[in-house]
Image 1 (cartoon, rainbow, N blue to C red):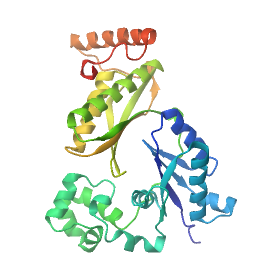
Image 2 (cartoon, rainbow, N blue to C red; image 1 turned 180 degrees about the vertical axis):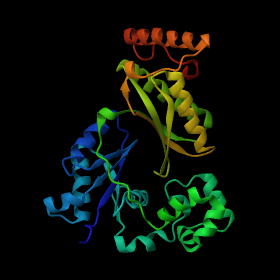
Image 3 (cartoon, rainbow, N blue to C red; image 1 turned 90 degrees about the horizontal axis):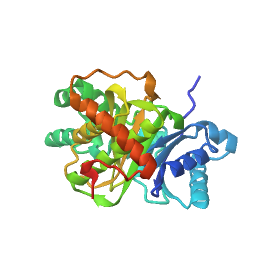
Image 4 (cartoon, helix red, strand yellow; image 1 turned 90 degrees about the vertical axis):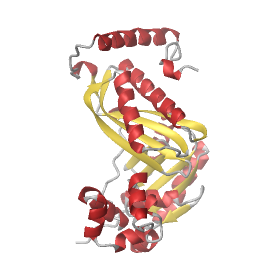
Length: 326
């Protein structure tokens, strides 16, 4: 029995959306297919496989219809990618101009990937790219052509194996339907492309403080943080860290988020937006906290309670971390 061909669409939304507006877009997309995954800060992925038979449309026409709905109802322009897996669809969308759709058909994936730079593959950071370039590996095709053992000697087995799979266009990940109650997200779209590391630090610190306040306001604690950075060329990088303990304490969240920012090694990257996602949520009274002998920790938590009380009374800007003061 043959396996049905998957058809995955990745839509870049060329608009600055609030979390509520992003939720409206997800709800609209759910009218096309129940298999919709949010890709913050401004993209969605849809598994159209089962929807094609229902609507009796080709994959390309299904994407055009979806883009038209977004334009008519919300005034949002998109660039789209269409392929048989999530990675290829995202890469195809990155290669599309606003209003256009790039369709990488299953039999054409290898030829389409071959001349593209290795940095176009997701998960290729600057350090990995520099290592590959140092040995003359500049394109995806060159990575495919070298022996697996050589690639493992250059990068190590743990990094070489997934890279080789991605270079061949393989990505088995399913589209996971969006579950708004399972996480909290805070995002910041910058007014212009930002190169300054100090401003990157400030933006991430502000988002972590915002997430902490929302968690405490909803009596929840998070066990995992994901930082997504979107660049001027519409590509993005994400890093996830499991927290030592579930928490809603803003300094702990900020330390984790800034650690993720440091791990990206952005340096002079042209950043367009940041998103912090807190998930693995559980009720705050169910989260354990490691006892501390540091009196400063107790004072910081007491000050946080007082600050939350002031924000509820006088507004969210009533009390802010000193590093965020204008």
